[in-house]
Image (tube, rainbow, N blue to C red; front, side, top):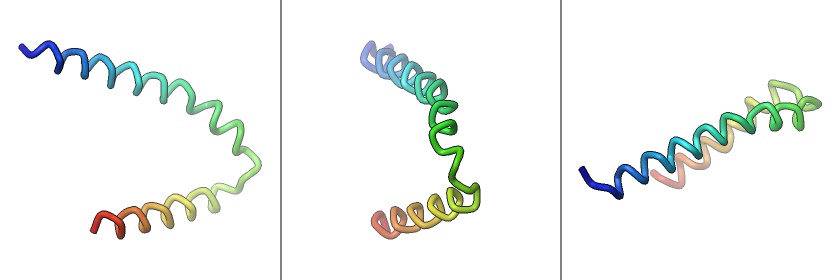
Length: 54
């Protein structure tokens, strides 16, 4: 086994748990924004990102 791959896996696991843990804080900060607006923003910026990679 490659030790670097093991360290990478642990790093990614820790980062994903941290992101998952901060998600409730994010939703509390944007509670005043309408769900439709959040969805529209996500669709719009995903489209722009896809154009960038295309």
